[in-house]
Image (cartoon, rainbow, N blue to C red):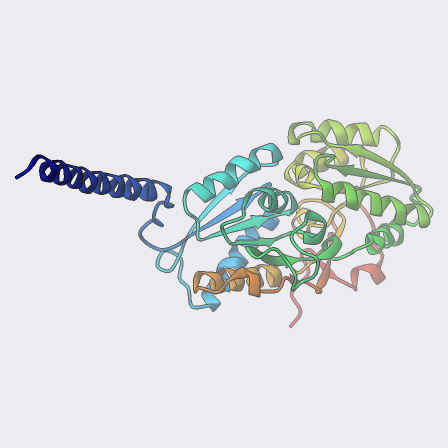
Length: 341
C-alpha cells in the first residue's frame, strides 16, 4: 500500500472511531438528561396538608370514597401518602418538592396555602386541590374552565359564605346584645387575611366594633386568644390554619373567660364552638377523588373544570353555655340530636 493510501486509511479509521465515540458520548448525555423512570407499582397519590385538623382527615376519607367510585382500590390501583406542614407554612415548599422527587402521579393540595405554593413550584405534575376558598386569587385560573393546565380541584368561596355576612348574622342572632367581635387570624395566610377583612366589613355594617388579633404561630394561639379577650370582646371568630390547628388551646382559653367561639368548621363545634356555617366537605372530597381517578386513568387535568361546592350547612352546639335561639337551631343540625328519619 502506498503512503498516500495508508494516510487515507488511517484518517478513515480515525473518523470512524471519533464518530463512534461521539455517538456514545451523545447517548450517555441524552440518558443523563432524561427524567428517571416512574417507580414500579401502583401510581403514587401524594397528599400534602397545610395543617392537621379534622376537616382534612374527613376530606381524605371522602377523597378515597371518590376514588372507589371510579373503580380504584387503594394499594392495588394507587398508593396514598400523606404529609403535613402542621401549620408551619414555611415547610410546604420542601413537602411539595419531595412529592415531585418521589414521582407522584398526582399531588393533592389541601388548603389554600398548599395550592399557593404548588402554583409557584409544581409545573410538571398534575395537582388536585381541595379544602380551599379561592383558587383564582392564588393564580390557579381565571374561570372554572380556564385554568393552569396541570391543576384542577374543588373549592367553596368564603367556606360557604363569600362575604362572611351569614356568619355575622349568625353571631348577631345568637348574641343579640353583643357589641364587640374579636377575630383570630393567620397573618401569613392570604386567605385568612382576606376573610378577616370581609368579616370586619360585614360586622361593622351590622353594628359591631371589631378587634382583630394575629396568630404568628400555632404555639402562640392561646396567648393570642388571651390578648384578644383582654380587649373585652363578646365573641370570637377564627380564620386560618394556625387557628384551626390550635383550636383546643383557643377554646380552653375562651372557656376560662366565658367568651363564646364561632367557627367555619363543624368539627370545632363538636369540640366547643357555639355554631358554624360550613361547606359540604363530604361532597367536595368525593368530587376531588373522582378528579384524581380520572387523572390516574390518563385524563389531563387541563380538561377537567374546577368544581364549586354550593351546599352549605349549619351545625349548632347546645352545650356551650350559650342559649342558641330555637329559630337559629332549627335551621341546622344540633350536636347530640337524633338523626332525622
